[in-house]
Length: 124
Image (cartoon, rainbow, N blue to C red; front, side, top):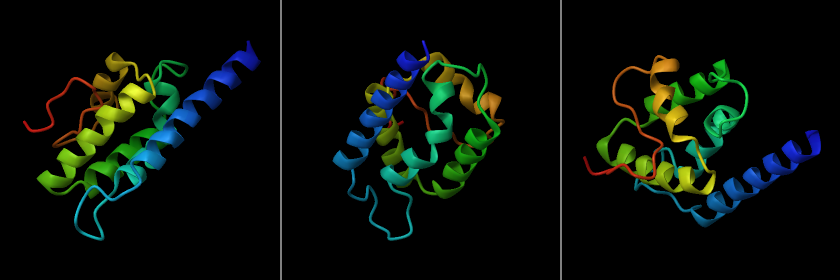
């Protein structure tokens, strides 16, 4: 069981890393804007929660990372770019969409949220 979990975790990390390499260019035009790679890296503490393994709630480090990303996503362009980034990552990492939808509430994220959902329209 432990080997299976380790293998699955390594596979997921491999997918995330492939996604990061494939999307390594900056999504925005300003040097200080958060990139897709930076956002995905910051979300790594959320991986166990978002992929449906234990724990049943996001960790404190996951929630802090989400708050930091939202703070850095301070323009509509950045939020749209991150939305597109998270859409692709949700597919690659096989994110549990129900858990992803609960993340803003469980982490008490205020203001605009950037969904982690492959079906969302990032232009709305």
